[in-house]
Length: 213
Ligand SMILES: C[S@@+](CC[C@H](N)C(=O)[O-])C[C@H]1O[C@@H](n2cnc3c(N)ncnc32)[C@H](O)[C@@H]1O
Image (cartoon, rainbow, N blue to C red; front, side):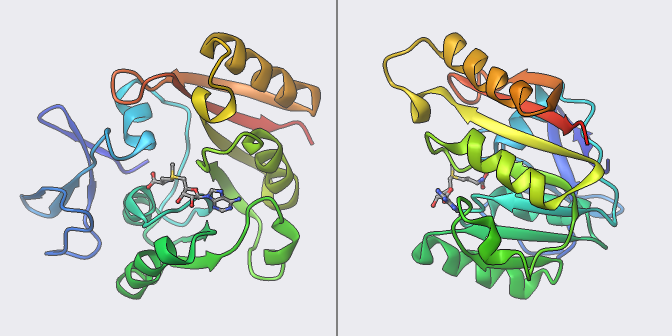
């Protein structure tokens, strides 16, 4: 996976040189690199915390649920430079920025849609190598599994970012994470890697999974 460590920062090679997407710093060397901010992107936090089994090639296809304005999507766009990211976001206001971003980056296909209803974008999205989910909703494990079942390739992976407080504000995060893992296992998913996102995000965990087809 083409991610570069520079002075303790995780970076991606900028596929739109000269353009900073969310105010991130650009580093000029032989090529231009964008510093990937772990406080703005859970994937950067997971990578800095040692996530190592995620596989993304330059031609990989990704289904991204909860794309927001495209902060993390933009770095994945640098990595899968000849691939495609189907970026689903349900807030029309937020999706405006994402649509603007997709004009600069042709490998991003923005979808104004609801990730709890994956059949509504069945005709637009192809099978993908990765299903990435960061919707911060109480039912996100269920919607993640639905999308995995419809769109993940047989040898593909899923990455679920769980924020404990989005699921339950009272229960202990450890218990919440255990319950979500149990739900995944009961439905035939195998957890390949588990990464905490502290100190960048409190009470968050990233679960890298594959489906036993
Ligand atoms: C935590 S933010 C995502 C941040 C983004 N992943 C990033 O790293 O740049 C969660 C996003 O999920 C979106 N969202 C929540 N429920 C959704 C749903 N059912 N379908 C699609 N998007 C949803 C929200 O509007 C919000 O933009």
